[in-house]
Image (cartoon, rainbow, N blue to C red):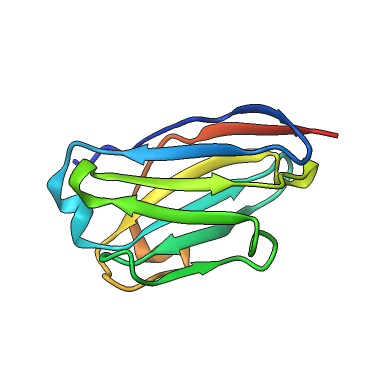
Length: 124
């Protein structure tokens, strides 16, 4: 079973930056799209960003567009989420997920493998 491991979360002040990573040892990771989702305290899980298999296409939630950047390094089996100009409302557990679809996907049911998540906290 493909294991996805997120890292890079932490505590940052509003306006700051963090980069979270999603890595795996499975080569099949590079065969499909990868997405980031988040779950804030007391809220439902929500889509954040997705990147296609080749990395050419990306899509973002409106709430993070212009502030977050998703990228991937298929040689390293790793996907990154660069988060800039962070806001307190970005505080959440961030999860990465892999899909068998090659194009970007926003729906969680399109993903078949999930990581355990990494905590991001943004102080005011």
